[in-house]
Amino acid sequence: MITTVTMNTSIDKAYFMDHEVQNGTVMRVSRCRNSAGGKGLNVARAVKLCGEKVQATGLAGGFNGKYLESLLEKDEVQYQFLHIAGETRCCINILDECYGSTEYLEPGCEVAAEEEDRFLQRFPEIIQKSKIITISGSVPRGISKNIYAKMISKAKEMGKKVILDTSGELLKEGIKAKPTVVKPNQDEIELLYEVEIHTIEDVIKYARKIYEQGIPYVVISLGGEGALMVCEEGVFQGKPPKLEVVNTVGCGDSMVGGLAVALERNYTSQEALKFAVAVASANALSPNTGDFKPEICEKILSEVTVKRL
Ligand SMILES: Nc1ncnc2c1ncn2[C@@H]1O[C@H](COP(=O)(O)OP(=O)(O)OP(=O)(O)O)[C@@H](O)[C@H]1O
Ligand SMILES: O=P(O)(O)OC[C@@]1(O)O[C@H](CO)[C@@H](O)[C@@H]1O
Image 1 (cartoon, helix red, strand yellow):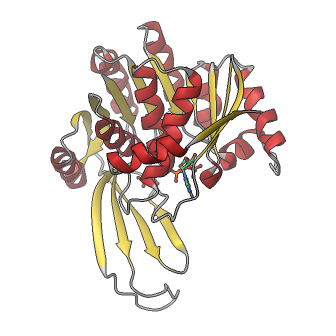
Image 2: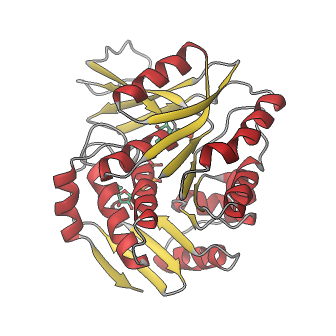
């Protein structure tokens, strides 16, 4: 089984606009879709669509927390959240023809130190039956910056494999605990090393720096260019075919889902990269996050190329 961790859960609201967005005016939304969000919940849906057993954990609170759980029930995703006093946030993704996707992400409610401690105490029991743990996204206010490092150490102590997908201080601290996989995108490595990245050679250079800190698989996602993997066998790039994308929000999460499934199935590193790129790119063809048509994913999988760099 795979457990996905989402500390900053969200009711994701996708606003589909018929007209080009004009700032400073009243805009009517043509269609709105709510989904259980925060990165790890997108990961959970992607894993489920791949056909593997999954459960979601993290923090949920208030009316939105209850709504989130009911949305997950519709998705048929099992969950075990710690219920907190604060309210689960909302995040808005405005989809229009001119700008594509514009996201407004709420920071998340204040979480008490005692609530963080309670989650960490329950964590070993929650992940007990899982072989793979994914940890994704931001944390709400009040949560310690080394919480992911603590979870990674505990999960590894219990013999689990861990995939970390986060940014900034949480990533920096998380890397110190040596998860099995980290999946930053280009912006996230620029932030981590306070550099600007212009070429694929730069990407390889900084991915290697992370690898040298004891991370067995470093996967850098590169949007339409696919993803780069640095591992013991070398450096590889997985490239999807050219696609008419619909919504790329959640592509990174779907990639984490694909990587988790690949670890669960003991794929080789190159097979894992190919599979993760296919799942992520299939998500780009759906208006929904953490969603794809399995037959489309199969077709893309047959067209993904993996080459050694
Ligand atoms: N335009 C695209 N065409 C084909 N595949 C894409 C495209 N954009 C993203 N993907 C797929 O999704 C993967 C992850 O994308 P990306 O690098 O945008 O992740 P991310 O920045 O972490 O995403 P997010 O944070 O929005 O979930 C890519 O490696 C690729 O496989
Ligand atoms: O604030 P975080 O956790 O970094 O990101 C939250 C978020 O943008 O990530 C997902 C897309 O990747 C959305 O479901 C969600 O709204």
